Length: 313
Length: 291
Image (tube, rainbow over all chains, first blue to last red; front, side):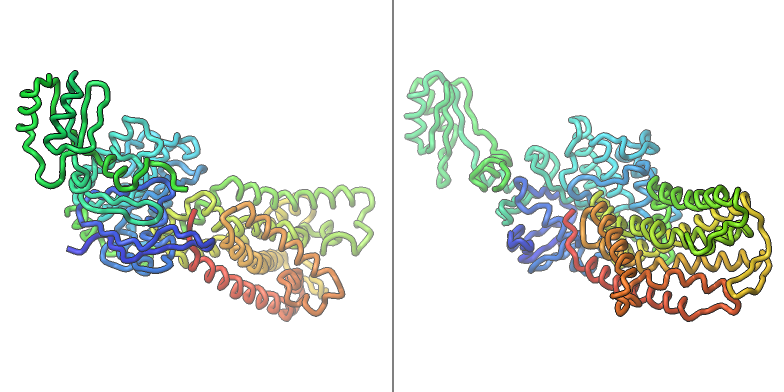
């Protein structure tokens, strides 16, 4: 099955000479919830703008829903809902009239079903009650919801959501996440950019990581997380003995913090954890807790970028 | 994949649906307070001119001094219909093109600075279609603005002065009905005279992401060109300046009508629309939208 998004060597160099996106080869499988990760300034938004035909690539190609962008925008974009770099609204129009305007801009949208579709979209993001209010009176969270509603005006094959939970309170974030899951279960592919790692981990099936304009990795979230091996953690008052025993069993990179010893299991021929535990007990190490910590996407990210989640310079 | 199936099940798009954007554009433009304020200012000009003429002529009878003030002002006291021609002649050099400059200058740049441009484009409005809708709306604004001035002037003229048969510049007299028809025709010609400014404003609007900058630049260019049109030393280039033949609409008040200057005016406006319209299109369709 053809991927929903496929780029080949996609590159954007701005007029000032700054290389924003550098040879991106991105593949977003159909039906996935795809997390697009990277620090601010890593080229995520430039990539999204190229995919949506707003920016012309300097070189390389981008195919969306099987057709080349930006050339096929007229056929592709009606099947795509997008929220790009936050919502933008007409302050002097009501929330409802904002949606009517964006829908009217789509030449393939049926005017006869417009009113019903607008109400449906407002309902879906929980804005039905505030639809008559002027958009300039909306809070950031409400604007964000209205932006999402405009992406949901029609059934879409692909949703591109750039930081969709920005400005929302925890309750709103939860609602958006469940909305994304619901859309995905309907068969919509969701391309979700975020700098919130736990958000990606909670809703995404696939992820890609960008830094400084380059794609560091892409794959399923499970594969990404498992690419960073989990660490063995032992909680014990006898840390010195524990370190000795663990070292004998080939555990490397041992770190002691208070009553906790953590270390990395060797990649080649890792010892059976049951044996390690038995050895600790035989050596009179009093073990309070024993187990491996699952690597999170954040660990994967830090391992990949070698840095924290900071703004690229 | 139920979503995709639903998408395929809806009716095939009709070419008429594409007109939704134009309708939305017109609705959005004429619902803005700014647009209504501009029209309000334009409607106020004939009121001021009418009152001024009334006050001026109250003591001295028939106005006396000819030659001062806008065209036709001396005839207003005899026939209120002439206030329509006076008001159009008074607003055409500055008020009308300034209002058009604001609307056209803001058209693309205003959407860009609000960020709504990207959402219109991914809708997808289509760059050429959006530009055409913007230009059509600006031209509609020209027409509405000219008719607002004319209607306001007609109302004030009828209220303050007598109405009656119209004596044309050529000396012939026509009925009030025909006079009204000519007034309407003049309003249309005035609106078309503003096509050059509208196209210029649209082009400037594609150059920047600031609505205010685009409006200011367009109005600034308008004033500059108006000044250049005054210098006798520049008479060689003046026939190519868009305001040069603006006041030729007065030739519609002759019997028979002199078409020569008016056709030249309309040709010049069409030339400006073609040149700056193409420039706007070339710029807008090739530009990266980064806001």
